[in-house]
Amino acid sequence: MDRKLSKYTDEELLRLLKGSRKESEQAFTEIYDRYALKVNAYCRTIIGNKDQAEDIFQETFIRFYQNVRVEHPKSTIIGYLIKIARNLCLNYKRDKKQTVSIDTIDYSIPADVSFEDKELNDLILFAIDLLDNETKEVITMRVFNDMSYNEIAETMDITPARARYLVFNGKQKIKQILDPYIKDIYKY
Image 1 (spheres, one colour):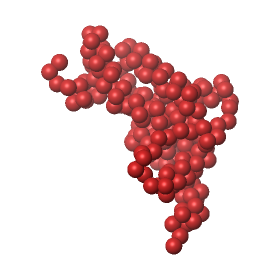
Image 2 (cartoon, rainbow, N blue to C red):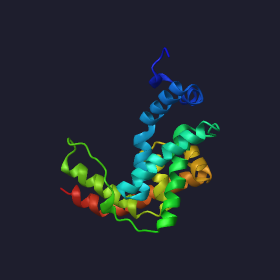
Image 3 (cartoon, one colour):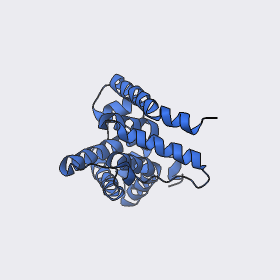
């Protein structure tokens, strides 16, 4: 291969996945490198338990690799990965029916972030955790994974208008939850 795979489009990588074993492995590695952080963050946000989220994250990429070699995804790669992760998360929640505390969510924050920024980040994550599951998923897809409303709609099997509404409504709820804390943190 003449070009670095990092310069390939998602479509080109999908075609390579169906090629020789070497091409397929290289294309899969590039896809993993591009989207692993987003899928992992999604799983951790939805599941809340680091170990269980890691298992679902790994299973997501296994299923992606198995499925994409058989059929071409009807959405973007990130949309397809999140759809697989979402189904696995929903299955896990249905089967386990366990409650998750915000304390079990582990997000890494860069060392150069100030204490106030870390505190604000924790408050935002706490507020997101208080949202209903559907809104939490949509906010996670939109804010953390930068998915379009159409991609969210396709992934969750809802309309783009519903996705927009859930994001807007979720942000409003987060603002309501955070308002007293923000006023307290930034009072002069």
